[in-house]
Image (cartoon, rainbow, N blue to C red; front, side, top):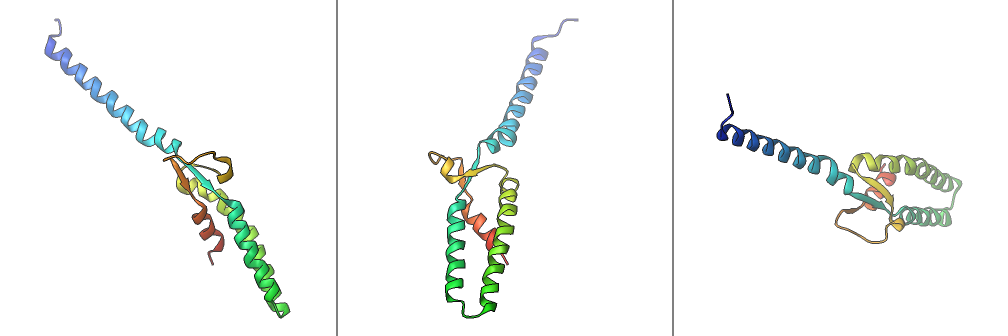
Length: 122
């Protein structure tokens, strides 16, 4: 028994629908997220914290104030690497230094504010 034209047309349309859905799912779930690049200005975050630390040390009148400033610096030094490791997992993107990117694209996301919040969180 030979398949008739309507059966072939139905199978062709079904194949076209499955292939289109697969390509669309791949584009949305795999390709587009891979194109997103997160940039972070670690130097800016570091300079801001360094300025805060210096200001506290210069105004420190007691040993307790100095110890508080040193504790703050130590905490920052511990949180920075952890926060940098968390950023790619949270955004689901590649994270690079802002200075490594030559130009901003629509797929570039600035994560500097997120990093700043992570290292200054109580």
